[in-house]
Image (cartoon, rainbow over all chains, first blue to last red; front, side, top):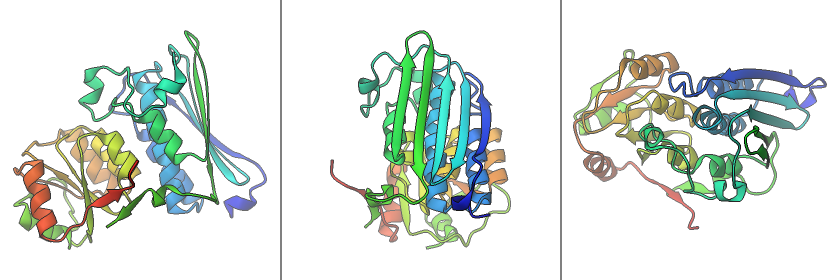
Length: 159
Length: 118
């Protein structure tokens, strides 16, 4: 079926457990395979997978776990990551590359260097973050199936 | 260049079974920070890293990297190798440092990826 002509939204969601670093990333792999099987172009699958992975790591590291949902409807893929964690104190600071509140144990895994939200923004066409201290965070990232303007692939090139 | 050539240059040994030595490689990216790999690696880019945890394979899968080189002789734990096999990502290990591994591959014609100036 051509996903562009889809009438009913396609939605799947997965639970992410807190500090489960063995399972972290399974949702991103799962969503990628699902999108591939639906005939979504590889570069779009890749973007959605990277966004999911970073959101998943945020939920695992900071959010006390959470729910990650993939929605495919009309001209877009929407990744929604919700947690009931501590919330983000200063969203504009968290969006800056290099700003982090993650402990050293996370950096030993290759994460926690303040690139999570900037990477999500980089690979999304639209990004909304709702957060409340002590209540949690919901992140909604949109990836257009037919993006216009500058694409991620233009940001880095082979020499 | 194919993965078999990379293995000879780096005097590397395979970590996963059913290694496809004919994987074609033109570019490489070396990092211990997976978020940088997610930010910058292009599809088809060989990943060179000194980290060995399972998230290395998750990252490699997400960015569509064709193969992973573990440097400094650090042997990944079983879960990392198991996931590499499950995902079909060829993985090799070399005792060379990241600097030397990169230098040898660059000398042999593997290209870097370039990032736009910020």
